[in-house]
Amino acid sequence: MSVLRQPGVLGRTRRRHVLGAIAALSAGAVETVSVSVWFVLAVGSRTTPTALLGVAVLVGGTLLRTRLVAAVVGTRRVRHGPRWIGLSLAVAAAWICWLLLAEALDPPSGPIVATVLLGGVLSAQFALEQAACQSRSADADRLAAVVPGLLLALGGGLLLWTAWVPGWTISTPALPLGVATVVVRIEPLQLGPLGFGVLAVFAHRRRFQRLLEP
Image 1 (cartoon, rainbow, N blue to C red):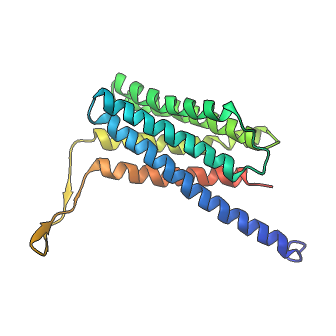
Image 2: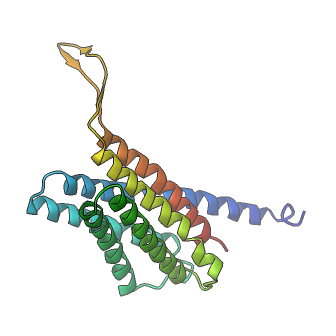
Image 3: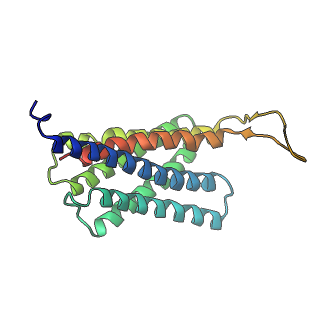
């Protein structure tokens, strides 16, 4: 009843939920584009320019996503400085090591071990971000970073599966379009980024729910 008598509290809560949802969509989109583009380039053409381009996209996306978190929770004692760059580079390195480890070990143990380790690294990075964004650092808060980290790692495992699954293609019948015909073709590697994006949005939604708590 006390909350109902304070419409300002409901307004702030609603704004916080809306801000968290928008931030989660933005962070999830940045994460999906950067990781998916890097992954497609990394598992595709194995040339040095392609590898460097993929790493640049991954690092740039990770830096942008981290700065987005800082901007959203900037009024809640965010500590600016080299820590943010270090955390971003550590996450980019974790993704690269994850792919190398998954390819170095025999399947299915390789992808499973690499994905579990990636989930641990991402969870630790999220916990450090949360500690930097909030004045309190209770154990329960740090454990809350485990679920988002595991969700993103699961999305990475989905990318691996779609890249290594035996080839299959879903094609629509030829559709006449004026003087030309159009055929829509769906392949596993196209579905991987879509699934990763859904998991990334859910992961960051859980993160911002915690980070934006009063």
